[in-house]
Length: 378
Ligand code: FES
Ligand SMILES: [Fe+2]
Image 1 (cartoon, helix red, strand yellow):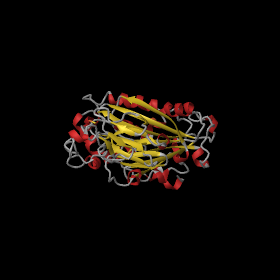
Image 2 (cartoon, protein in one colour):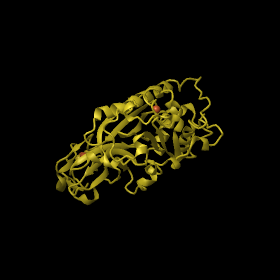
Image 3 (cartoon, helix red, strand yellow):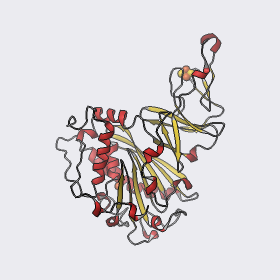
């Protein structure tokens, strides 16, 4: 991104931002269920890296909203997404990730599907399913799209363009091109907090000085720039002294070769609403998704991309150094949200404004008829 692309703090509106969500947004089962139906039910979700899906039969599974999906490479080399459900009695077909040989076989009654989703084999078909037309019973299609080496899936086969979801973020990545990098690690972390606390923390500029005083203390938060693009958000801040090797987050090695001077000496944090976060640095491009598990728990799925041959462990540890601090803070807030004394006080004028924007997007996404929409939630 270029400096002129991002709003300077002085350009921020002067009225203090509001914390728009009530405490029950962080613990109530009905609120959670409505979010699942509205925010997470039909959307593009980051589900894999293209690195994991290269050969025929390679597959990755993921649940988007309530829909188990499978992304599968066909014999023709094409990547497709399907609902991961057998068309006979509906069981989930594949788990985790890996490679199937010739076909996808359902272990219940051995219906078999080709890698392009077509139903190929129905045991005892002539006797037991005399009128069945296999053309009617292939795997149900979903949508898949790849952006910069990242694989996204949507449960709807006629999904809107992925670009609508990414809106604004690709334009604010500056010289970062994650598609030129390799996925070097995947970590899944349990966080005992509502997913929104983790996202709020991600867009909170104020905590950089304090919670991350040592891990991010080498960056100049006074020169933090950020911009809201619809529900999405992008940011950048430079190193204080321009000394890569002396910064805690980076060792000055394994730098990404294609970065320009500005991105080699700065970091970025971005949000693709509702729950896909990105962090960029001289050595890595990280994505982390806060996947809701229950009102009070989330799974943080961290994917690190770096140059081939980079020290994956060191690079992953660099990102985990601040992510662990974030989880600790979010879990401590979660423990308080059910207290009758829990109240959110004043928010920082510029540095916590993105939280208000995030809340507005959550409420807009949940819709005016939601039982817990503004006015009916307290
Ligand atoms: S449920 Fe898959 S073959 Fe019966
Ligand atoms: Fe943080």
